[in-house]
Length: 568
Image 1: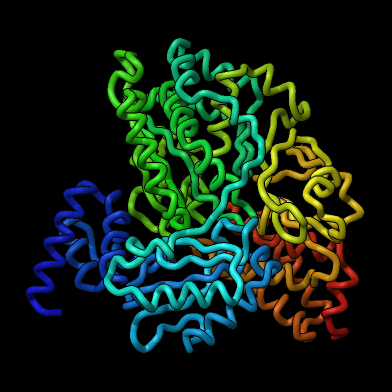
Image 2: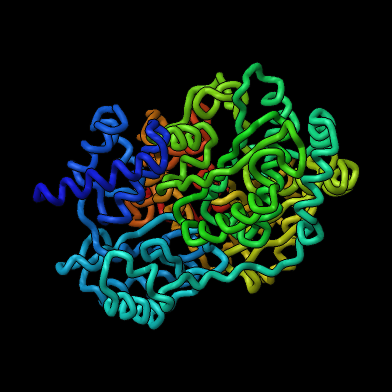
């Protein structure tokens, strides 16, 4: 790199640090901007960033090497990432993959000689209802066919310049959001906030506690207790974080909820901030959803203009609150709340040891409440309609309503709202899943339910889920299903703890051997025991849940699985 180019880059990085702030938490936003401008982050760029932020270049490299959307080597002007999730597989991603390879003359993991295109597999893009899907730079394209893939490549070839994707209307995302009727349709975001500000903080939290609302991201921790712990923490600095990093294969509800109810979501974050005593909120948006960021920022700007964010909100002299959007950089593990906080702080997204918990020591040491998109929207619903309304739905142990992401072998994929306690059979009938042989509830980290158990209920006390329902139709190979999920976990493991780092690879190797008929029954038994150990010994939910699909498939489809095994 010539000295003039070095000086230019250094000046740009200085400006970026001024924009985002001279702190470690600015590292990832700065890296993302450099990546966008240069298509990769050079060694020189890492050294400059490290120097300005006062950290070691090795730390910067450690972050760059952790996130899949950050690169330390030159990549194509157009980065093409084809989703390899199970739902996209069922929808015909194989034919699209072959077309892309033939069209570009390269294999996955390679870059064209002219430097225009890079081709990669990527894990779930959150488009399971509209697969096959692929991401070209920041834009997402759905319902792909080989012909549509050809058109997109041709459109890219006609464009020149580093910001081509921003200029080409023909290359804008074609995602369509579900128009399903949901409880949130009837809510007025501004009126809910005004009502909350007329209540005591403790009254809001009490109402959430009485409702029995549990986290809708999968863990199911009581929301009211989380808010109360944050509110009770002894600190002048408290924060609210909205976890919009839904990377679970088969889950896409939060994408639709943000697109349709952004105003209500930011109102709900503000209510949470008022209830817990926070002045700042962060929306952590997964990198795959970059295409909706501008839309969300426009809603935030409008709320500031209406004095519903900022100082003296809605005339409340002693209450101020604002929201900042932060982008993920491609790491499923950042859906875990402590890994998310590490990412916000400019670190590798590795889960923390607990205790302390985020409600006591969260982002930058401040008590922090972390809730996912759906949870916050239900909290707003409860403020509007009362705890009694919410508890009037669901079961005693699982009160309330739930949004489900349904994909796979069914006639009507999309999002659906049901009371918790709904039977699997009812949901399958509604989505047109006539020939389902199994349902994966809870995404890759969930469990596989066979047809004989379709009368079981979706609830915390029976089959728990963060919302993903993947329908597996007649004729599907269950070993291939297990392989798809284990490829995902082996790729997404952060590698921090041994049970997950080694265990996910060993589980994957086993199903690969089964695919070839090279796995003995003894090895399968040993690997299932390893999976049970991982469920106990892994540090976070990723490693603990990675074996779930294989263990449940082996239990419920024993004859089919053993049919892939050799006698010795």
